[in-house]
Length: 174
Ligand SMILES: C[S@@+](CC[C@H](N)C(=O)[O-])C[C@H]1O[C@@H](n2cnc3c(N)ncnc32)[C@H](O)[C@@H]1O
Image (cartoon, rainbow, N blue to C red; front, side):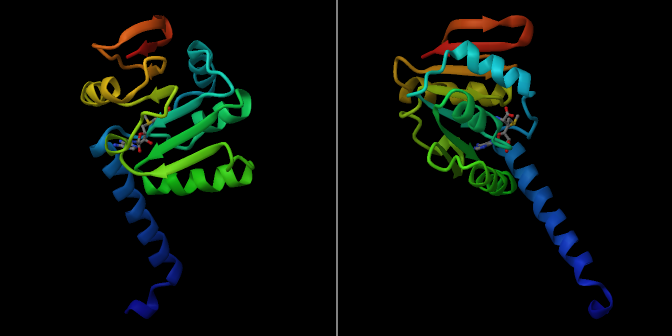
């Protein structure tokens, strides 16, 4: 029976199952993948006033758009942390093709378990309950000069230093 099923059908089914598991897992661990629109990426980076010698961390970097924009447009260094293996692979390929491997590093893992103390700018586009869980870690680990930029969701205990409420962009210090 198996020999009657073309190999590509098996391959497509396996790839589909792996993708469903990866996407479901990332939702469980913090947030589903919903990309920030590129216009908003630029607005968020501008509101943080990111400088060329600074290090940006994107907590859940998805397809890598913040890390690429930070490196290309602002000449910053960027670290993307991603728990979805499909996106981790995508980002590795993307930064290789774009020649950004010296300035962008992509880590496969859970941002709750990684040290964030090297970050100057932290990007969050997660969920409100994930922000609530993350807040104490940011307070404990980030430098006083670091800025946290959140898309759509807020941090209740961090200090607002800049914001665009209409666009739901919030910039904080710890
Ligand atoms: C709403 S998307 C934001 C993607 C990207 N930062 C952007 O703004 O376009 C959230 C991302 O976080 C990832 N993610 C969720 N929980 C995570 C965790 N605990 N560690 C690392 N990545 C996580 C998801 O896989 C997803 O790609």
